[in-house]
Amino acid sequence: MVVARTKRICSLPMLLGLATLVLISVPLKAQDQTGDTSTTKKTGAVDKGIDYLLNYLNMAGAKKSNEFQPLTQRERNKLYLKTMTNPLGFAKAGLSAGLDQWNDKPEEWEQGASGYGKRFANILGQYSIQRTVTFGLGSALHEDNRYFNSGKHGFWPRTGYALTSSFLARHDDGSRSPSFSQVGGVAAGAFLSRLWQPASQGSAGDGAVSFGITMGYNAGFSIVKEFLPDLGRALAKKRKKPSVPSIQAIDWTPP
Image (cartoon, rainbow, N blue to C red; front, side, top):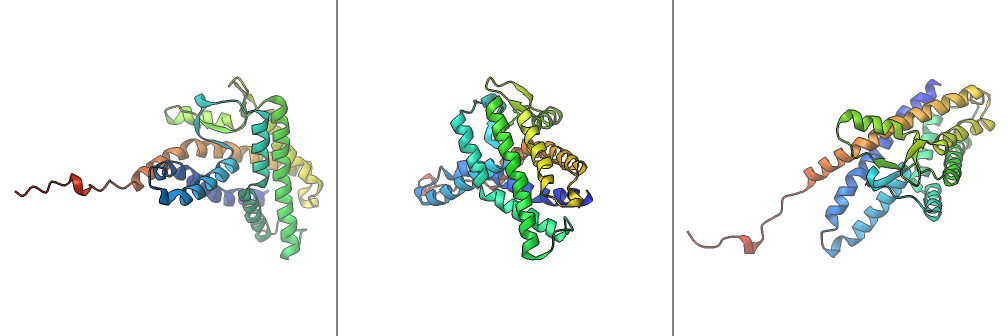
């Protein structure tokens, strides 16, 4: 259990880095779009990277809660397929498997390529179950688990909104209620993965611990999602260079 917590803590800086990158890139992208056509290719690459990051973080871009629009089933299908093929998900699974390999977790799985492959498949399997169950239940119950910025002011109102967003979902009318799809997906990934885990990680208690850690982790990271746009805008503003006066604007009249 200690190792599981260590893995979560070690993964947090990487996820914070990803989130910071996307939230800084959004305002920078808007600035790039005002430039000439020489930046078109760069902007296209940035757009694609931002799209991957927003999908991985399950964020509705820079939209606020009052801008919510319900998803059609076609849009849900598209988001699910993009999530399941997102290269960032595979990269995260690879890094997490490396951490488990380093910590020899679980100890029954050997070191070397074979052990790493088992750990990678384990993490990817849990992730796939969680996403698939969440997608299925979300579609059936018309729940939307994407994160929308609160649009609120003040630390505590925004923090309260972020914490509740980790277990609440929006319905087609914009109302929020407990997210059976989100909680059910996390539970399915935590408990069903015990079926292929070795004895040291295969009990129902281990599944409960995994479920609790994931839900707590989601709650904490919702707070990060809420406040990181502020940091992104501040850094983008700092990076913005003052405009250079044109030759026509300079007064050449001799004194």
